[in-house]
Image (tube, rainbow over all chains, first blue to last red):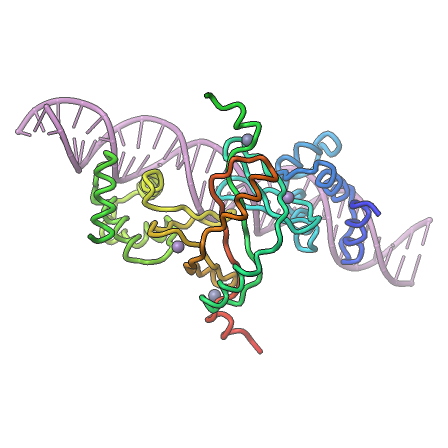
Length: 143
Length: 143
DNA sequence: TAAACTAATTATAACAATTATAATTTAAGA
DNA sequence: TCTTAAATTATAATTGTTATAATTAGTTTA
Ligand SMILES: [Mn+2]
Ligand SMILES: [Mn+2]
Ligand SMILES: [Zn+2]
Ligand SMILES: [Zn+2]
């Protein structure tokens, strides 16, 4: 079963109406295989939906997040990026061009446990990102 | 030598003028022992500097960041928080009340190395945060 | 199938954090 | 003290995101 069908099934199960806009946003998220901003999505779909409001994109991304279909990646005052949820993974981010690359690594249970033990927090999850320079940007650097 | 004197020395060495506003912002950052927002600082100092502009706070926090005196912690569209740099450490954040607690852990070199190996990135650093509920909020929860 | 109900969309305004601008003031060296 | 570049101030602009209210459109019910 493909990802789009599964996602639509999830929406149906949780009582979220399937609208053409939602269908298109999901389709874009899955096919783009990237981490687009709300505006990326808005611009990519304006041909198909000339009247779509940017609020619709934001509203639906929130809905998708609430039902667990997407993850929102936030960075300071830069715009948030959205990741269609497949499996648990981390991100490596190029500080030069902003590229975001998926990166698998076994969960850092040990860190969570130590943090919980030291601070007394009830730990739910963590956020880990690696920053550096991507191969493309490295090769473009002046020597 | 205390932290404030050291910080002022750093500014002098890098040719950054020491103004009363900069002195006060640094003093507040060091004494508060917390992770204030620009607005926290602005409000805390408005008694001493009734005419200080919020732009001054932002400008100087940027200067301090550039010379390595503070780290900026960014979170989506919430306001950035500023951490006077002492030693390398991570943060445990309460999802209920927003409290940020310092947390020491040996650097995750292994993760950085694997990420670099798998993605081809030249890795510079990483960001790790633990999310959960603080002891205070846990005890206040309804049973 | 048609009517009714309610959620979703749209257009627009509002918001909040941050940055830009330009005039004024001031720290620090000569 | 004088000079000058840097810093501060007041204000406006910018940007990503959310709120509001009217309209439209899925879905359910009869
Ligand atoms: Mn991803
Ligand atoms: Mn800290
Ligand atoms: Zn790059
Ligand atoms: Zn708490």
